[in-house]
Length: 344
Image: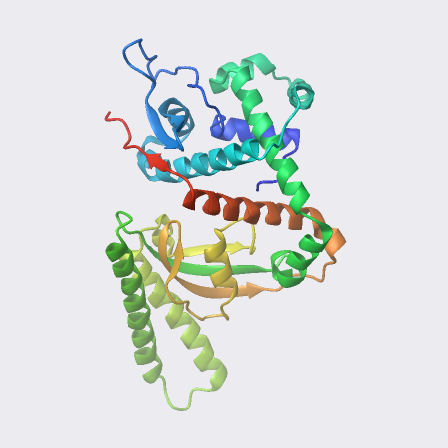
């Protein structure tokens, strides 16, 4: 979520990410990132309108990822860093300012929270391989974003988001199975081929289920037919997931969830899953991970809620959507260069 985190949440974020988002200077060196010499400038993982995102920042975040998954995680991590930097540069240019005393207050709050759990602020920075100046840049960027986003999040805007998406806030959940095909690169032809393959798989599943249903005795009652169709569909879908899916969930037949509409799955996946009836399959659904075929296995309705009860959650969702739309808009107007990872 892209709202203004509590100090506790901010500390957790630092622990998980190693402070990756906003620094414009090379991060402190780590064993996996040797110090640059006078003749060796710091490696740049990506640049945004000429502003670098240093390889040392990416490497530090990836240190917290199992080695076998680092190549898989790297593109998404760099996208995250690029989007954050695009927005922060834009807000700086637009005149959004953060006073030093505001950053000082957040740092003091952080020190207080750490002391409560028996941790030392300076030792935390050492453990995370983060300089205090870099931490302050990160906090400043978070505060700048919050000032901008909070100004957009009027009660009228938030109430409309709530009214249009009540199943996002009332505790409704969906359990699903999915098949993911991930094109090896961003070649439009390979993307189209992946989407076509998803549709072929859907047709194959439908044919197998129809053939199985045709074998049922003609005297089978309607309830039994529905139960048998559900069983055949989930089992056949699981078989195809194990054979074709690029997602680790293939080992569980593609099963995911139960999950709410916001905050767990990427928006295109969640929106498609929530649009399905129980035991209905989607068309090919595109997300940043590739193309999905989704089968809704179970829907659970939420409870009646009022806007004031969930206003903070609505605000978080709005901030997320605003961050996503603004970064996409800025990317279309910017020069973003992503470099190949350094050879090991």
